[in-house]
Length: 177
Length: 220
Image 1 (cartoon, rainbow over the protein chains, first blue to last red):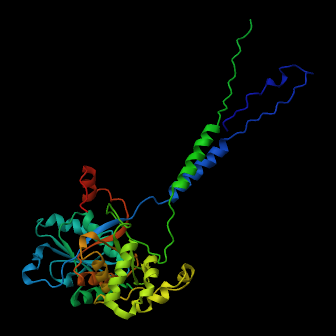
Image 2: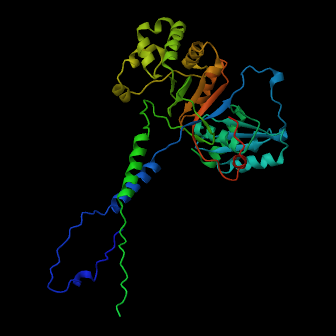
């Protein structure tokens, strides 16, 4: 590749009859070798994960909270996100679980952003309620979503009976097993 | 008139140096790469945009939850492991024979309930690979994990700030198991933990992305 034949036409320089002594070159074309070397480098760089694991901070409240410690939430600023099985996400605004709506992890960001845009900063409160069938991945993803959308006030809680019932019904209606 | 001969220049380039560089880099990368140590309990951690590097090697108290929801306790510091063992002995009494101490200090994690700990600590790594480890018992009240956390806290003289409580959950672990782990922590008045995740790029266009472009760091 790197060496082009420049000897063409030079074969008869010495005229006919003069025997050309064949010179054996000791040069080896290293181009394929270089190709191979860089190919391997690229391969190893792409296949190695250089990244160190990171940690996400999580703070949980005490269980025995007094009435005065309870966080007051305005109904207009409340958004509850429920995590179901099979990576399903449900949400409702305010305090009425029957207004439950289905969503997905891709769409939930827009829901959160819309709520954020329509609510005064101090009123916004998101409650995350992972269901019994939800995976840990879903929980981390939704917490991550809070970081991504810069939500200041959010909490993790267990779904109450009404919410569980509504989620189960929605799952049945949507045919999610 | 003789025509001026244009000297033909060979286009051959000496590739030796290039080849040297390529293989030098190759060997450098291979030699400096650190291989992932094989784990007795394989766990696939979820990814997040969190940017704080995990400090897994110093004063870490790691609670791992695998995809089946089995919990394991890992302690990074061998000195602390000894202390934790002593504390656990106080709590559990004769269930933990003192002869186990050396084995416990050498083991990297707590693989089983206290009652059958001696059986599992005597296994060779090959045997461990073949068996399914039962893990530390866990229930909605905290289970035995609660006691291990208590022992861990006591080993650090009750100072929560000296320990990194890290939760290493598998992607597919169901939330109730994670909730149980959190309960175990809560019972010991520990409210601050770190969730171990693998780094992920911040999605462009989001508020966090705008912040990071402006150079505002995420609060850890």
